[in-house]
Length: 428
Image 1 (cartoon, rainbow, N blue to C red):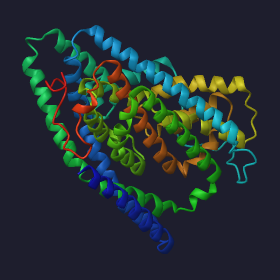
Image 2 (tube, helix red, strand yellow):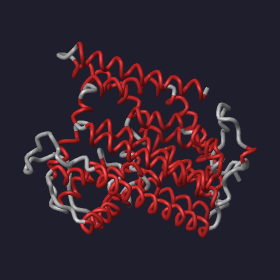
Image 3 (spheres, rainbow, N blue to C red):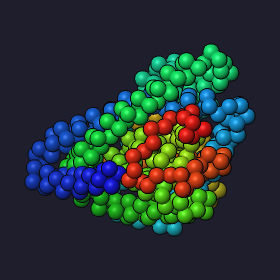
Image 4 (cartoon, rainbow, N blue to C red):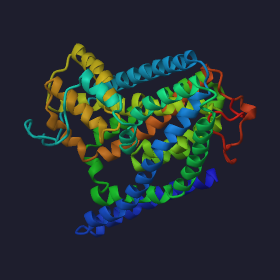
């Protein structure tokens, strides 16, 4: 099933490119309408994903934490997880900074620059502790679930699970219900993922129909430099994976092929969440760890997005010939380390973060208008990179905690995944 699903995704991507190019070339008057109509399929799939994310995160996370035992263990896992996230974010931001200075994609930019006073229309505001805490802590769990605020769901789930663990006798019945809910949500996820190839075809076709492949050539040096940098980041992540996990890391890379392609083709890390969680559990990571680390990663460990923030910010400064001494660039890196953590769940979050950062360093926010037209193509690479980074982080934390099943206990990657959820004896 796994290999067939992978082939379906690849075929869908190829069909999307070819059909989108044909529409763009031969139906110039109707390309916008066609793109809008086809994109409805992709939007429907993404809404299905959003529909299952909140209950899936809640059920798996509560079940996992409730079976962790003492609060000290939860604190230890959280400390290790955040330590990894901060380190990975710093490396990603630094790599973007180094690569944009080496490649200089904005130097002698041939195109016309947007007027410095022109507005991007993005919701730009300076970072503040108040805004971060407002986003971090939900005023209502119902609202957090309705808005798919993963970080807020995580906060509530942690408190809820700790309370369950503190009342073992009274919580048996409700914990059983939550574990049943996790089983049901995994089954619902399987049903939803049947539509993934169709959504991939629609997303690719809509993007190419609307923009054409020629749009890529307008900023080919910027795009090329960014994807070269992404490949280097992939190389670093893969190398670290082999160092920490050994040769079995190849197995993990095979298991996350599908979420990688889903994230790339739909330009959405969120769309890949269910398949990534399934792949990690099949790899041997305890559901207790994967259901805790992975949701946190969607807020604090977006490696591709981190690298893009420094790369795009310095690129815009280069196009406007704004001198950026090393000290200023490092200050920008430090600023991005903080501001990027407060916008989880914000649409086009990386653009919002960059726009807010540019204004703090007197770089024209209008420079974003140059790259907003190709942002979907860039977001494809960012989203796929985020999947690799979060799957690696989860596996590493699982190994550090001794909750990564030995290689000989795991199934082949074309086998049926085990129907396990947090607290199953198989994982205990």
